Length: 417
Image (cartoon, rainbow, N blue to C red; front, side, top):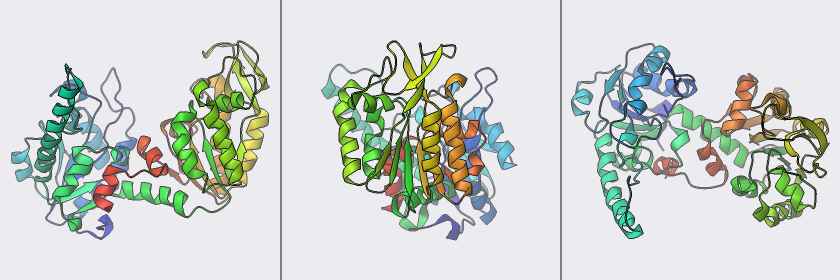
């Protein structure tokens, strides 16, 4: 497999799939968080330093028509230029940029318009269909158009570089299909994807014990596959967030109005039984901060998680649980964190998630390898300004979850084989 650090881009045009689907300020239209732009810089700068030309392609939002100014990548040009330190050219139509590509010189950067303006990119037909059969036929026809779309993008360049890990789990024209039009020597991952894969492979294949997985969030059903895949690897499994109460209910506890997946009680017990059979220590919150309503100004009380008062709901872990969880994390050599401990967006229920963020950072300072993934966990780390205090913060979201579940990601397989 070709690697970007060993490849010489001199005199070549490289089409690079980046993830510039960045948030914009609703009032000014300016980029409000350029983390994803910064993440792509090492790859872009390597190509330019070698004497190559860069063609950038990305999604932005979920447009339903072509074009849609609200989702135009033109809005991010100034932010890319500011980080890159040079001007960036722009192609108004990603599928009709032949003239601009032909004129592109070594050292220049061209940004293509939003790939999602074309339904061929995702391979999903838009609009309404009278029958399911009609929809199937439209999808089948679109798959052929997707190949032509990907081939068109491929025709712009000598080399393909995928550096958008956040979309690697989707079989899109720009992430999976396009790779078919390049030889093995001329397609590769960018530095960002390489670092993502290295961090996740460290956790999945060479984690030092004790290995602790911290799984938070609302639903057991969202995390079941990753939990099952990790049970053969971890020594400790910490459960937090809303899914706590599905486990508590399954164990016969009183949960008041707390979130619970009533149809997943058997699944929760099955997880606990599998963990016990494999010798995995499972830690479930023992006390919680409860609220009388789901609101920032709610009245609060503290109780045992299995003795939640009627009419109240658990929205954060409390001190006893924080102490237990922090001790487990402190004694770990590998830590994976995916999902918050409570509704940390509200200050009244942020203490638990904040404490876990600091515990993971402290464990890292003591020599543990820590991987943070999932939007809320990443937000919690960033909110507490601890991103540089943990080993790796994944940009992946859904892609990271699927990789950790053991699934094959189309965008990765297209290059790795």
